[in-house]
Image (cartoon, rainbow, N blue to C red; front, side):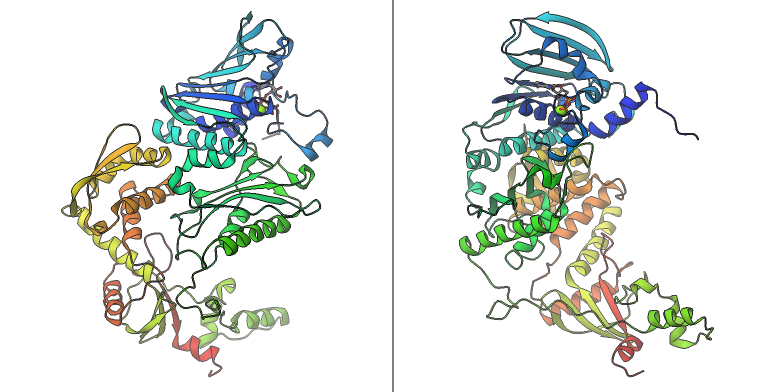
Length: 590
Ligand code: ADP
Ligand code: MG
């Protein structure tokens, strides 16, 4: 097909699809506009998770009457005029696409008045077309009302989650901007209930308390004053003391020049800074602000502007890691992992086995143009993918032989011996597999055994997790939970799958909801299997837990009896096998 210009109505929707993924994207764009307009008070009102209504009202600079219509034209912006401006963007918006993209997929009304004008301007846009325009009385500032989002894009409507989930995402957007701009007063009202409010007094810690609650906020350590580095990135914010941790990395928030961004390498920098300070498998909580010269960061990378590119990523990474680590070392107690020496030296990372000769040999043969008959071990080497040659191979999807437990390494792996060599078993992954097959079998036969709580437990969840629970309520009640809505973001829990019975059920349920929250992934298997996998992951023995010889032996027996013993329910290997041949080769016996 030849390259062609898309008709405008198509182009509108494609761009909208990128910028406006869900109601929270609309809120993000409108709030960014209000911030760019210099507002000190921003009020966000939503209905039905934003699907029916999103209204953002600010007391910012307003739009002059003769420019209002232009604001809805694609690539119309007041924030940049030349290509060179792109190299140092100091505003949140700059693409001139938000208003037209939103207007293309909803019904928008805009009422605006700059302080110096006597009368305001009202504009209505439906499906991208301006349908009404008139002068109107208006407070100074701008009110944008978005109704019937995606009314003309059924495919997008289908992907919207329960209103509670969408509200949760909106809550996240608003709270993050409130953190980044503590001098602005934010209000979020969902279906006439106030969900969040910040004081706008400039104190970031007050905002943190409003978001996390006092109990959690008290476990956050303020980063030390950034040292003055000429032109270097400065890092400020809060990091959780090591007593505070979560099941995943969702509680790491990053702002670059006060823009809320997602960046794996920054997450990684923080997680690294906590090395050995948190229990295995747990993730830290942090809110970090990186400030650097706008010329040092490219924000024009992604339509939603949630990703940025640093000119010198390594420098930013190092600055973040240093700042976090310094705060932790100075302010937090430093426990040693049980297997580290008294000097605090950490467990040596497992040395990679030396490269076998298969790959090099093959290269040599190929480059010499030689033909060599393939026999025995060499033929085996040929079948092994070259790039995995250096890694011990996870073994295939067949049953395990009978194994004899030799011992435990790093409180994480079980060492076992079998007829074909050495087996390293990941105790957590193996136990997950065992529990998963049992629970699935129960679920298919008579239903999962459930344990009633002595007293019903009131779960008071944050809006995001409440949304996750609302989304999965029916399925959870199919797999041994007994949970019902109790108004707002509260739920009443009466029973849990027996596997979860034990102390601190509340924490267990929260961890499971956290795991499910990651489950937007369309590749995921059936909902109930996914839930069962999450329950088993939470119930399984953890890495870092000492097991007795009997416990290890029992676990290995149970693993041997599994249908698919070689992977955990999430597809990671449970067992790594070093064949006798391989050991001999590595030791130069062959
Ligand atoms: P961008 O923010 O990338 O410039 P938008 O489509 O979001 O593009 O907005 C277009 C223009 O409309 C902005 O450049 C700004 O001049 C004006 N505008 C939008 N929202 C507001 C607001 N709340 N207050 C003042 N001006 C606004
Ligand atoms: Mg904008």
